Image 1 (tube, rainbow, N blue to C red):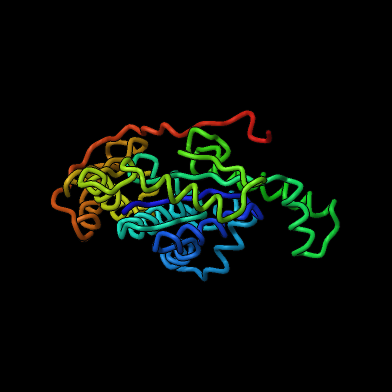
Image 2 (image 1 turned 45 degrees about the vertical axis):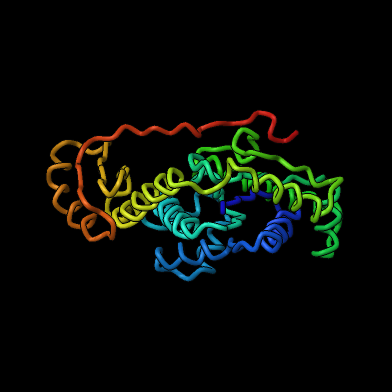
Length: 278
């Protein structure tokens, strides 16, 4: 019992690999489900959120606290699914939210650019020049999303347990590699990994409940004890907002106690790979 995340580019066959792995292991394969749930939290139609995501990271600024809310809602939706275990997830930088979970196998699928160009030409019935332009633009936009929203470079191999170049492999070959790897004892779900996930999920639920009103809020959780703070807010605002924050957080299922305090941001994932185009 474990979780697999697959990061991929367009026309890299990553979706096919994810679906094959899920079928082989009897796992649930999810991707669009997370975006649908996030759009419900945003209270906007899914298609409108999809269009915003395809524009540029700045598109989220059209919504009030759009960036903070998007990240918060996606994190909550993903962790809720992951809690079920036996999941294959592909898309939307899932590995970012699961970096500290030991039972998650994180995969990156890469593909030869020439093969991707040919596939784009075939599917869209366009010229080679246009196909190459579209793919480069798509790759650049995906990287911008990772850097702008999550502070990570999706091309950084340190984020993954395995990077698979599918150029000389079939979908079946890649899926077999992943299935054999995930069966290693290191990726088994344990009581310790379940606790880490439970704490992360509770913090995500509380954060999602607060983010629209308090977009800079920081939330952590440990066995139902939730610590909440906003290091950027003046002390008088903290005092005025404290009761409101507690009132919202107390209504989140699983919260046993709330501790108000200042938190320093601890983000170890701001990494840029200068060789991302190689």
